View 1 (spheres, one colour):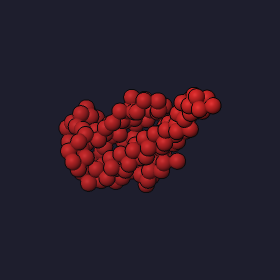
View 2: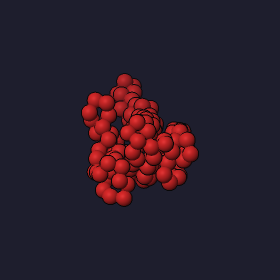
View 3: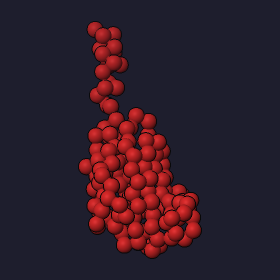
Length: 134
């Protein structure tokens, strides 16, 4: 009997503690927080900030030549502790792609539809720049 319980526990326990949904929500919240920070940097620097999300991860950049949005976007946005505002998508999480470009006023240059992160969605109000994670 004890052997049977051990086998059942070994097979069933990982399914009881599946962290996939928690990891998806955590990553959706991380992207939401990064979008909010990118917006604040756009307002504070008086220069557009672009946050690009792909299936592989996300990163935030500003124009290489100060505020010239028609050229390259090679200046990485840094967090207060001098790390680059970027991260790779954790394994097992499906993420759609989107480009969010905040203007100095805090609004979006072009409206972007909801970004899907697993079963969750991240939306940005194009007029106010408000970020919502559901």
